[in-house]
Image (cartoon, rainbow, N blue to C red):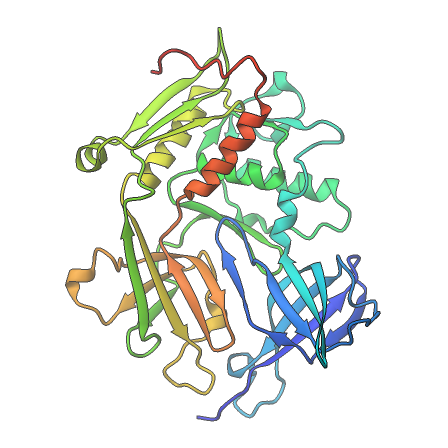
Length: 404
């Protein structure tokens, strides 16, 4: 088999879309992508003078990384080579460095999904929006009603696009289907990403979202059949499995801040998990909950995701360029599913038939994938609670004396 060298090019454009240049001489180490997010930071080192002043090195410029290899070829003779996009984002940080005789410019790039956390979900100057059947969202509290979560997600992205010049996030309607689950909720001064996170948590168990390399968002359930099949000794030789009780939570308390009418203070639990591991409590306060049914969906989803020990599988998949036992690693995306083959049956508990890929660390010669870890980490929880506490006045939490 002929060895095909991977070719990487980086296209630089202005935020408004006008082409600037193509970088071909650079150092590129890779990047990570995760579900409930998108492509993370990518670092490019350019062999430029410390005082280089070209207009391609500007904060906010758009970056597109394209690749060609054996899998993109139109035919085995190497004619009509096609490229694929493996990353898109914008320049967020520029470092200029001199180390003796070596000069360089280091560019840090962030994926477009990060823009969702930098702006507030709003309509004109109104930052509280309400769920509404048929419309997704409304600005009128009196029109509030329960709406399908998929419809609300589509409306959230519509609001982002309407409120931003040159929006980088979009969707295809087929990638954000109706979920069949309706909720009644008030979005009060939430970023677009916070809104998506909240909607994911009220969705059916196993729902996730992902903003891909082109800024297209997907929101829904994982595929029902494996997207990839990985064989031990052929596609991978290195795998690590951890099983942890540290993030297990089996008793959930939620309160909506209401006092003297309309208050929701409820608990949810899993008796089998409590019997096996003892009561492990998680508390949350959410002023946007306007109906008990929405709290029930949050509670049920949380318990289903958190009642069992966390299983994490980390596996390195080898690239197939110049290696007939490798895999087309560019085809592996967060949100895909996979099955592993070549192990004894007694490992079936750890290697299930259709495991969700939650993170992909991309390198030119391999990808390191993480599967089946979809619950929120305790750091995320602490950040959310810290923000809530900062919003509370000196009158205290006013939590009811007992829950139902």
